[in-house]
Amino acid sequence: MNTVIQEALHDVLHPLEALFGTGIEIHCGDGHIRHCFPRLAAWIADHMEYVVLLGLKTTSCPRCEVPFNKLGDNILQAPTRDYAAYEEIKNDVEYGTEVEKLHVRRQLRAVGVNGDQIALCNLYGVRPEALHKPDLLHGIYKGIFESTMQWLMKFLQKYKRVESFDEVWCSLPSYPDFSPFHRSYTQITQWQGKELRNAVWIVCSTLAVALSQPTPAERAPFAQVQRCIFALVNFIFLAQYRSHDDETISLMESYWQEFHKEKNIFLEFWPSNCARNKADKYE
Ligand SMILES: [Zn+2]
Image (cartoon, helix red, strand yellow):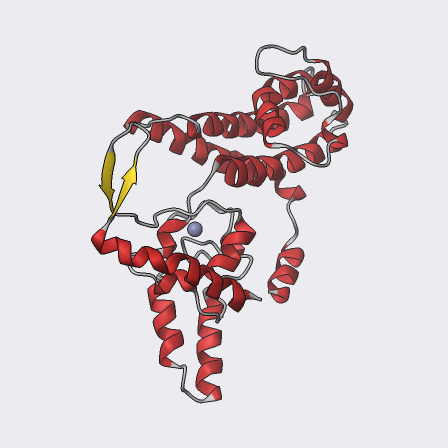
């Protein structure tokens, strides 16, 4: 199946190669005709689509070689993927012995790569490692935010605050661009992008009310969980700026660091090491 996808991709994108050098005249929206040189520079997809597109294991990052057990650890120094090198290794062994092929497969799997040929690697001027672009819906709303909300709900269950959270959640009035939720957080099973955006808007204030009047023992965890969610929400808001300067980028980085610093409040609700190992085994 993957071979069919890769062959189809190659056939669809191959004609672009001729245009890399000669260019093409394109009628632009402003009425002018411009001589353009198309470059494949980005590919917007969700994670599972990237996995197929780039021949990766499901637990691999499309941009870097961060190991599975370090995902979520905020590691910034994992080596960038070199898809051209992976292809070279595969090509070198094409006519090799079975033992050599097995060795190469193991070597590639150790960095989260399957043995399949990848169409995008064979197209002129395309750097597959640079195609991955984090997008708000898949990477942030459906990725980080939804997972964090699942942890948060477990946290609220532990401290018996789900009811008060849901009560505030459902009682917020509508205002321009915001449609209130009629169902509690746990009753919503399928999230739309717009609903997730609304959830990001109201989560800090809803949480503040739900966690009001803590007992002395609850004070520290309640403060920490709010710092964590607050940092994440601020990061998400900043990620939506249409342009950035040094100040906004450094703010994003500091909120991101803060989120990671505080997220250990959810540690007990993360999949256990046992579950992680199991997932690795099925890879
Ligand atoms: Zn990465």
